Length: 242
Length: 304
Image 1 (cartoon, rainbow over the protein chains, first blue to last red):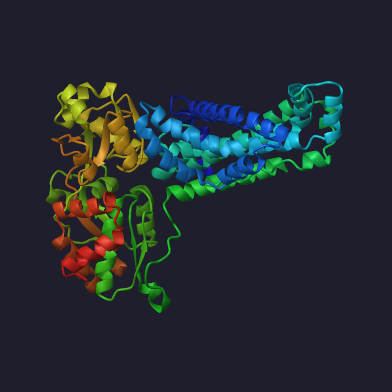
Image 2: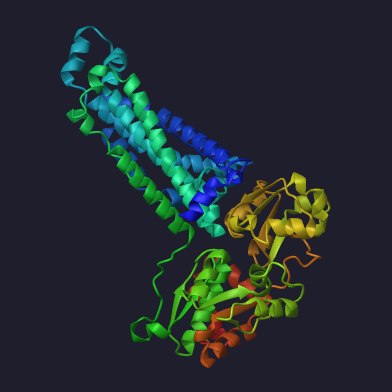
C-alpha cells in the first residue's frame, strides 16, 4: 500500500505528457470517441429494430455474439491486420477504438431496442389514433418513453469502455492503461496499483455523471419509481472480457 | 447495484489485464509432478519467442537425462522473472551474458565476451550460478529502415545523436527505465529522442511500427528474421552499449546437480548464432511449435 501512496504523492507522476492528467485526458478522449461512434451506430439501429420489429433475430443475435468476442484478442488481430493500412499513430489507435466500439455497441443497441419495443402498445396506438405519422410516433412517443432504457444502455457501455480502454496501452497507445502495462514491465507495483485505482475511480465518476444527466433529461413521469418493472428490466452490464 | 457491478467489472479488467501482461503465471507443468516434484527443475522464460525456445531446449535436454522438469514459460521481462529466480519460484532461465550483467550492475563491463561473462559471474547473487555460455549471441539493437538509414546516412548508433531529437524510438515498455534502455542510450551515446514509444519485446508490433513509420528507430533482436525480411539496418554499436550477449543457462545452485550441469553445458557447446537464428525463424516465421523445434534440434545434435 505504501508504494501506492508514494507513487500518488509524487508530483512528477502527475504532470507532463506522461503524467496522470495527460493520461486521464487521453483515456477520456478515447472513451468519448468510442461512445459517440457506438451510439451513432447502435441507437438508430436499435430504434429502427424496436419500432419496426424487422431484423430483430438477425441483428440482435449478431450483436449479442459480439459480446463474446475477447477484446484483447481482437485488438491484436485488428492491429496486425488493419494497422499496416493506416499511417501514423492511427495505425494503433484506430484498431483500439474499433475494438472498444465493438464492446460498446451491444449494450447501447440492446437498450434502444428493448426500450422502444417495451413501449405500451396502447400508447403507440393512441399516438397513431391522434394522427401521428410513424416518424412522429417514434420521436414524440417511443423515444421519450424509452429514454430510461436508452440511457441505461449508454451507461453500461460507458462503464465498460472506460474500464476496458486500459487495453489500448498494450498496443502502445496512451491512456491510464499505460500505468498498468509499464508498471508491470519494470516491476513498479505502486504505479500499477495507482493505475488500477485511477481507472476504477474514473469509471465510478463517469457513471455518476451519466446518472445525473439521466435524471435531468428523462421525463419525471418515467423516472420516478425506482421499482418500476421497466427499469428493473434494464440490460445488465456484462463484465468486460479481455 | 450499478456501482457494485461497475467495480466488479473494473476489478475483472484490472486482474485479467495484469494476468495477460505477465504471460501465464499459472502455466501447467509440461512434465513431472508426482513424488519427485520437490526436486523438479522449474524452467522459466522471458516473454519473447527466442527465450521460450531456449527454455524448451534446456527442458528437453534435462528430461533426456531423466531429470524431472516443469516449465513456466513466457513469464515477462527480466524485472519480473529475476525476482522469481531469486525466490526459487523458478530454477533455470536462458539468459544473455551482457544484458543480465547490466541488469544486475548498471556499470558492468560487457564490452567483449570474456568481460561480459566475468561481469555476470561477479554480479550474480550467491544462490545462482551461470553455467557455460554458448557461442550463440543475440543482441539488442537499434535498427532503422533502409530509407531512414539512407536519408540521414546512418551506419552506427553514434550517427543518430544529431537526428535523434527528430526521431521516435520504439522498444519494450521496460526500456523506459532500464539501464540498458533509454537512460543508458542517453548516458553512453548522448541520444535524446523526441519520444519513446512503448511497444512489445522486439515482436510484431515493433516491426510494424518501424515499417510504417510510427517509430523511426526501434529495438530489434539481431537474430530476428524480420530484419532481413524487411531490409532493416542494424546500426553498429561502437561503444559496445549492448555488449556481448552470449546465450547462457542461469540456474539455482541448489538444483545444479552434475547431471543437470552436464546436460545444459552440452546444449551450450552445440549452439551458435546462425543455428539460433535458424531455429527462431522456424518459430516466428514458420509458426512451428517451440517445443517441437527444440525436440528436433536436440535429436539432431544427439542431446535427446
